[in-house]
Image (cartoon, rainbow, N blue to C red; front, side, top):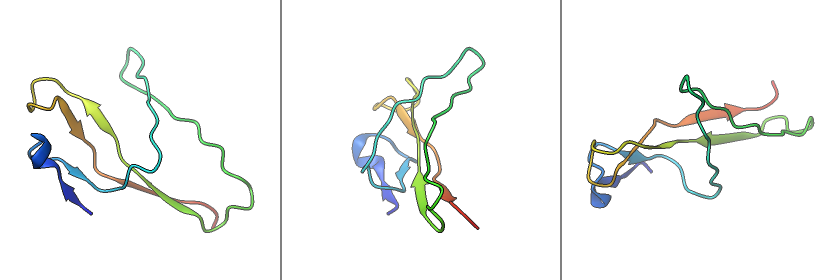
Amino acid sequence: FPLDLSFLNMPGCFAYTDMLFNAGVTLDAAGGGSFPLAVPLNAVGFQFFSQYACLDPGVNPFGFTTSNYGRTYTGN
């Protein structure tokens, strides 16, 4: 990673994480969305990465664009 997604007709888009876990997020009228994630109290030092693919018709032939990645740490 990063994987250039030009081969999917998504020039300028990259995959920064694997697709081990996928979930959909629906946006509200203001464009905001959330994804609740339960994290155990004893998950100190746990980290995970996230990335979004957004439906974006007309920007490229595939119709999606990707976000940058986010890294989350739990605990101190």
